[in-house]
Amino acid sequence: MALSRRALLAAVAGSTLAGCGPSAGGGAAAPAASVASASVSEAAEASEASAISAATPSEPPTPAPTTPTTPTAAPGRPEPTRAELVARYGGAEPKQWGMEVTGVITELPAGEIAMALTFDACGGPGGNGYDADLIDFLRKRSVPATLFLNARWIDANPDVFEQLAADPLFEIGNHGTVHRPLSVTGRSAYGIAGTGGVGEVYDEVAGNAHKLAGLLGRPVRFFRSGTAHYDDVAARVVADLGERAAGFTVNGDGGATLSAVEVRQEIAAAPPGAIVICHMNHPGGGTAPGVVAAVPGLLAAGRRFVRLSDVMR
Image (tube, rainbow, N blue to C red; front, side, top):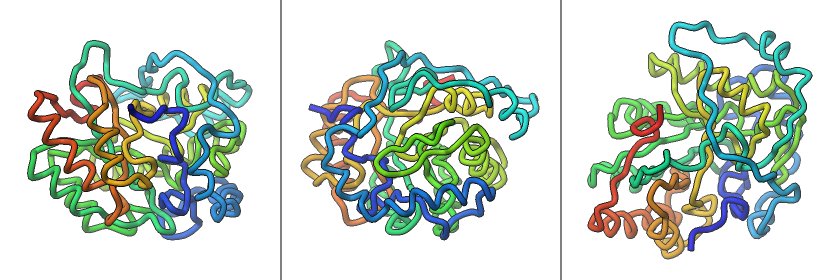
């Protein structure tokens, strides 16, 4: 049985073990407000590995509809500025918090029988690795995937980034500037302090979005927050910035902590229409061999794999 989204097992929680902990160094320079508040979460980094065994976060996610919010920043429409978004949402009180909130995609559109493999590269201490075996396998079997890349990981792997960005098999997604839960009130997940206001939400999303647009020559379409936690106001900010907030259906590798056997079981059991989250920044772990073991059987059974943009409008 696939792990519950609420259990998450710190899949994207930012633990030292999972290599997703925020860091003041090793990545693109974030706006001052974002970097300053990110240091709060760095203090908790040493204790994050112990959170992996927790079945639920200390602040349980609030159940909410999963109907996605359509981005409002259409092509040709000017992106709202930080000040404009602060004015627009500064007084808004979030009503939902967690991994399943209004505006966050947690599965493919109704009726879609394909599966979307997504791989995060969180960056920061212990998280700047590159799982070449995983990517080589996907290329060998022509399996498309969406790759959510953090600004710090991009800075640590510029040559690899160029190769991935040039490969039409892969779609590049935004995994934030310093990998933080997306909140307008500073709520934390797994010991990582969230963004402390609308301005910091803008910094986390737009900082890496602008970086990626400059490198790719085009905007990216999807954003996944650090820890995959959002509140509903922050999700609206993501939409206003022209991106769609992405969650997941199946936690494929437990934050790069599961064994190859466990990864195979989770992915093989994913239902049609699932968005599977794994990690591509931990070579030598169970992710690559688990994916290698699971995918051929799914292909043989007729399962189709897609990038998010292939089925999301």
